[in-house]
View 1: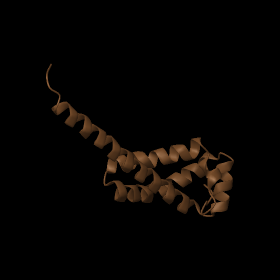
View 2 (view 1 turned 45 degrees about the horizontal axis):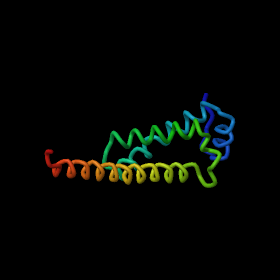
View 3 (view 1 turned 30 degrees about the vertical axis):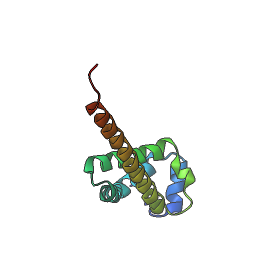
View 4 (view 1 turned 90 degrees about the horizontal axis):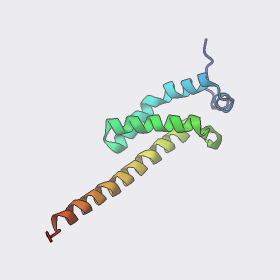
Length: 111
């Protein structure tokens, strides 16, 4: 029987101990609503899914739980929003650069 990690303090304690069951609980109980939140910002299901996966990978590999000072849900919500907004901003910059390059190529005169 898996422990009930509804208490943030217990869940954080288990995450700090690198308990894989605690991480699985965190993932299975939060991935869907994080995905919905990411889709609402990005309007792109594939990118939203990628960002949610990245968030959980970063959370585990970089021990991001060490930085939680509020509730886990609040932390995850802010983290996925930041990832989504950063992606949107960076994607916009990338698309602008592509447009600039294609425009500059249109006006190159042959030698």
